[in-house]
Length: 417
Image (cartoon, rainbow, N blue to C red):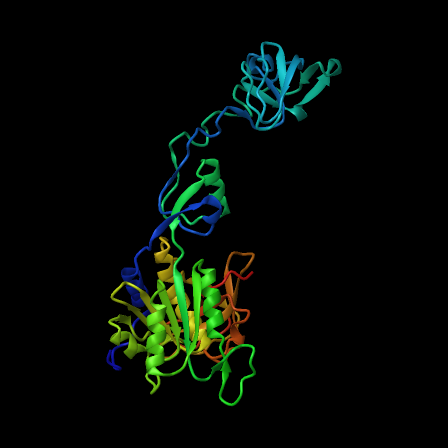
């Protein structure tokens, strides 16, 4: 691409990712392995649920006509019924309930034949040394009873394709009898970091060296996206070495590479991608931080994201673009980068000629309004200013400075409290 090509708008870049990244392969897994994955096929319930008519509470199964008067009010004086048995959850009644009779019943137990209502135990008193029960409140026919098939009937679709499986969906599938489900395979994401200046985190930087934080940031972001990170380490600022590393990384579904994407003498990544036949859909974005961000696809359909070397630029680029691709590969609609109106609790500078993203701490007030406090931050090379951030204050290009009390748009980026 020509260096004077216009900067890509963020929304256009996101749309290009959506267009060029399609859902990935699917696999059948046991239910316990389906958590935090996306359904590729529907789940049907194999039986009526509940599978039998059951009691909603602990009490006495009765015939409603025994405990209400003709006008539907409680019987007066209180009805006294003979207790003819007891049913625990998981058991079946040995007999039936006839006129003038009651059967003690536990929550979830099947309603015995003859009974058509349940009176809560707290509305009764034992009588005749437990051989009878005094009913203190009337009950209508069907009261405190769940009929068979009330929740769902056999053969009904209970989970749709595209559903993200949380613990609640695991419970639904288990209740429906789905021991195995078909889900989208977890994408593998190769992580490559470029830069002669980088040293491992357990080393003390000397001279012009800095620690390699990008590899750890991306690894965490990939795992947070429920994908599999494949860390391929640091590669020096050498064209041949970068090409070899990228070729190896393309065995994965997605490549995230940081550094070497700008226009410096040693920024070889764009040229290498072009040499390998990749199509560069996004080369530069109109954002601050994150201007030199690349999105490309290879002839085999692999998605490549080349992110800036500064850690916060890489973080922002991941949230804006890479997260969209990883959601698509997993069969989900990517989460919208929903813009929320918030009241500032501190100043933010003018963004200049690019859309800016400023780290902030945001919270929802008791009145249901969002507030955001901009954090002290020294630019995209400063990870410490992001340590407590859970949001980014987004300022459109050309906006004036904003101060405390002004309303701005924010994007939530973490789940911190």
